[in-house]
Length: 443
Image (cartoon, rainbow, N blue to C red; front, top):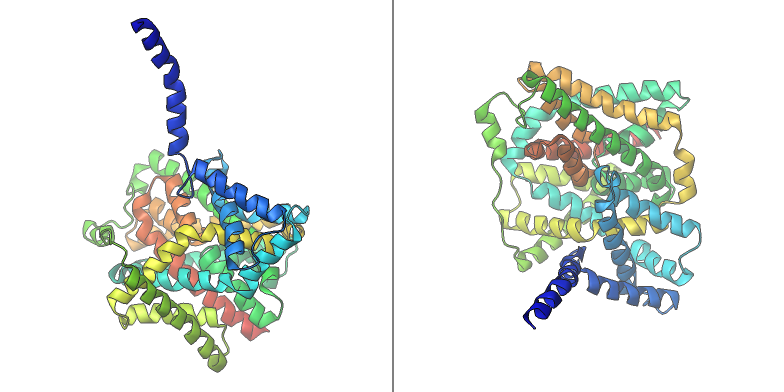
């Protein structure tokens, strides 16, 4: 009997272990088995045309697909290292719409959420205002001072290189600058391309979806090149130790200590979070009011106003924390679902395919490579390590915070995150503002 019992327990253990692993799997923080049940309910309702035609129905569709595709994008080989979640969440829904695999009722429900309820504007406001107000002010100011020259030099090099290569491949300077270079260095999708699409729409007169479809491919290709550059630079650092600080940017322990400081983990105060949401709404409304006076798109003025308020310390720290809590919630829970909505409604597959060509990819690559090289060669004059300076500068061409993580992970230099955030957020916001002002002058 003892042997049979032992044999039975041994035979059962792999099954028990497998069940334990299944229970441990999560899709967007939802246990796998529960997620399958939820996805089944949403799918059956959508196929039967019984999905509630309101915000709840729209959120159910985009969140289910967003969680699933983001999870797949994080685990697929190769794709997970080049921004897989963003690529899948944008392109898979666009492909499904192209082949008519969504019911008309489902598309109408998502349309209500994305365009009539305008979830897009809400997410943009939370991402931009919350991220800027949540930055450490000392790091913001010191980082802007340290990164000003590399960012300006890198931006100039990227623009000149992109324009030159674009002309060689038959692109006009106008198209190359506003539809290839600017989206690459605009700070990602949430903080860059979405405000840009709204700004371009306000200036040029077409709907934002047309511009999103033209801007997204450049940002994705640029992010891939930035990740590759980071990996190559890390290898250069291994072969030439004198060129790298092994994760330290500045050749000064005192200065590096400033950027090593960070806020400790803070417990979320939901009442403050509500106050922060009200503050974000106020910033968005102020941007819209100022637009009537200075004739610059409201989302761009919202970014500028947030930076000025952060610099001048006019917002109480508790309210900044509340706004940053909203940013953390939106960035963790709504970015991938939002991209599903963008893919379904704003990114027509035929428009994306139309912009791709060998020349297009080479132009994107030239922008990123020129930016990285400028950081590499200017570093010694600024008392910086060339490898780290080039990596941080290349973060200016990444897909926002997700791109920063991918770029720094590829080079094994996550300690550079404060500098990367400066390059992405402030560099991206500056690019959006300047490009919008320039476009408004040209038009």
